[in-house]
Length: 206
Image 1 (cartoon, rainbow, N blue to C red):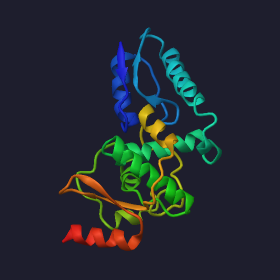
Image 2: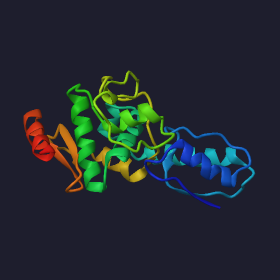
Image 3: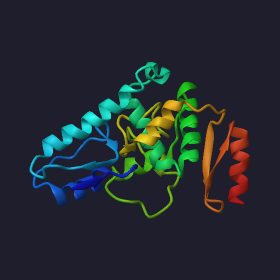
């Protein structure tokens, strides 16, 4: 049996896939594993499978032991950052830029203000919101709402893929601190300061 865990997917989506394979299983935490394709040798032994994919994640991080980012952030925090990027980023290049924004804002102790965390605060990853977020959503008092809290959420909000972890560990440098999604151009627009961000956002809204 082959199981593919998709980057940015939820525990609930994975549980449905595990239901098809294992008679008995438990949910797997976002921090425990890396989204990838795995092969299952014994459908009757979920614990053995879980240990296998946890070991894969632990071994994967061994190659980053000397990475300077791991002196600033724990592996769990890297996984949290990765989950935000998975939910926000459109492609590899876009994810690199978003990663730089998140790291820049954390460095400057700015609130992250990431919409995906607001969505998670509302849904806990259990369903999709079929509407745009509104101003009152951004005020939700929730430990995952990065418009309200300082720093990172307490846990990841999705599963994270190996490519996303690798791009975080590149520590790609930009001066960007802001971005928003332009639905007409179908891409994120990045800015170095609030004045420029507001100008671009107003132009988009017009």
